[in-house]
Image (tube, rainbow, N blue to C red; front, side, top):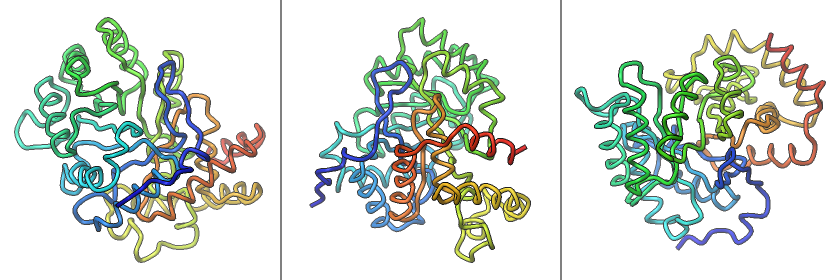
Length: 331
């Protein structure tokens, strides 16, 4: 029977999620990859155990994470049953709805019908009565924003989520959503967006600035740019890499065109005794707007390596001139 490490809260710091009472670990575990039915269950268990044993209390899912859609939630439900369920009150579990989940007109986007039905399905798959955070996963250009936000407010009132968040929103739409949710006294506490050294979209679409001004937390997914900000692709493309196994999110031409920049960033990392991945995580943690960095992993050792970046960042923050060097390298 699994027993969590007694010293699990000794190393990884927590950060306040905006102006709310919620604290999140500096690093959280995302189940976007490696928790579908094509992955070994025992490896999933090892990933979650390693994360929790080292202070990662936040596990992030979505209804469509797989493959197949729903598989990650179902497998995480098994892990809760077998290992982590006894520690439920120490966990922050989040899920989302917004992308295509089932056939027909009611399994996608942001309608009231879709969001309410999707969360009910998610809770059933995980064997939970509630999640800590429920996100709308992307902006819906067709459904009135008021309808989507009212659905989120109803979900909290019904006790099926403690907080709500928005994912892949821009600053202007988030500000409108915030006003609607505030009027309904709905605890909107966090935004989730892609953010890393290579992808600065949140700096330009208003969400980073507006979220900070509004007192919302920010959790960043793809901090390592799907693996590009690691040493994995600095010399060649390994035969067992995701690029060759699953080209949906990262392509060979992306790596080849970006490699000169990656080599420059690797030189900066080496000058501070860091790996490229450690630099990428430390860079995000230095941003005052960032609450938590959402990592993925296929092996427990990758989790431990990412946590080492936090420890190095806590000991010695990057000076302003190095941050400027990174920005200049990107231009």
